[in-house]
Length: 183
Image (cartoon, rainbow, N blue to C red; front, top):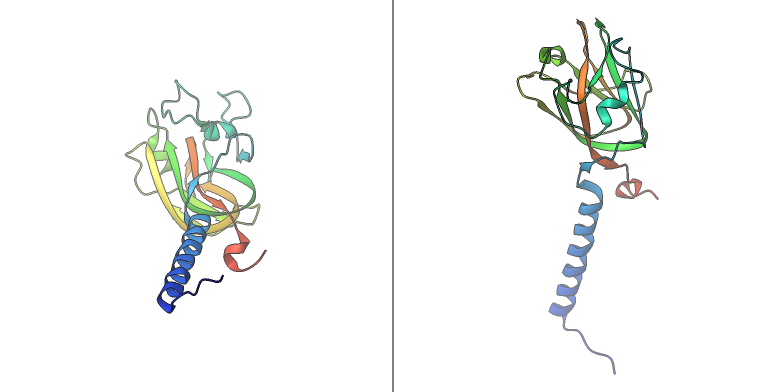
């Protein structure tokens, strides 16, 4: 009536079960994907360029990666000291990386030195994820190494420039507390 499992069969089943659980946990807890930012988050910026209709911060999360402002308007601040752009994700996320589509038709260098900051403070005083060092390409990749936070800021410190972002893509996952042994 009952099958008797030999020790090696039991061990195979235990190993198979362990591998399935580990793969499930890894899939749930580590695979970053681009977050759907359209309509579920709030974007803001330090000022609005007077040449654009208001509001403009959301133009950096409209899923358009065109880097020519005349084709698809980008989020642009006024020329000011330490301009910033922010994103409220409305929940805490594990952020793997951020990709910024830099404006290439004019002033692409304005993003140079820009800091990406991620944390739980609604002010721009969050830890730095990375700094933009190369603005020669339209796509700027910044690894964030699974930083956790609700707020993302792009700030150009110690410079007076127009901050110009054509698109911001955030790669990560909602913070899953079960990965840390909590419900």
